[in-house]
Length: 236
Ligand SMILES: [Fe+2]
Image 1: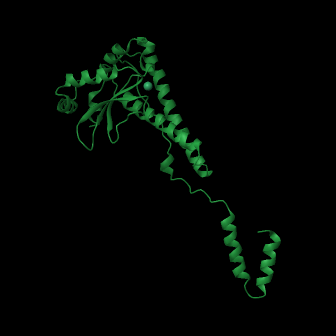
Image 2 (image 1 turned 90 degrees about the vertical axis):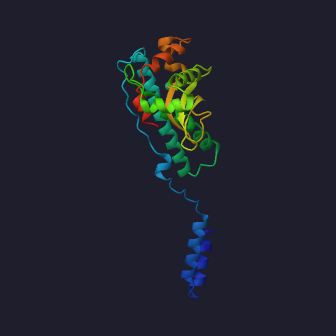
Image 3 (image 1 turned 45 degrees about the vertical axis):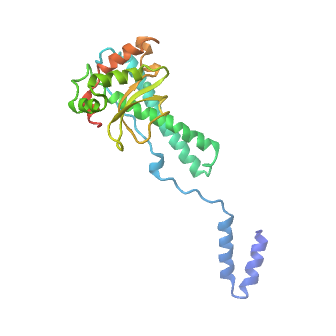
């Protein structure tokens, strides 16, 4: 509606005592013409995460420089998780949440977020030269695999599979018990509903610097010698 049309409508209706009704009508029309304002996103839907700190001193067979480089990669996952969430929030606020950009960033978020969380599990369970096997953890793996040694063998053979990814022991809150899975990248083939309680990174950045391209087995053995099984047991 043009400005002159609006004035005409007000003039015509004023004499009949209908000015207020006309103004209301114009107000309603103005609301209808205005682009729909995006609803503000819930803060928790696009939250920001802080990187955690982990110690890298004194780990047997795992050199500090390699671990520090690895931690820098971990902080990159936190940064990119936050970036992805910020982009998603901005696109939603701008009314651009229905396009490819939003979809692709949301897809990417799974990679960054899972990379962040798995590295936190991985680094938090490290301690120089490891600890004695936690009885709670030993009982849990024995209930599933029959013995501690059988779980070690199964998680090791999982970690030595070809490809880059993770060997992860999950707790199943729904069905009970534990299961070992191979995760490609970070986010592919993640079993729904399961909680990671032990995670072993076998991307090449985790070991090639120290052990070389063919050194994954030696790296896995070294890593298992630096695990705080009490930390792992508390995740049950
Ligand atoms: Fe990694």
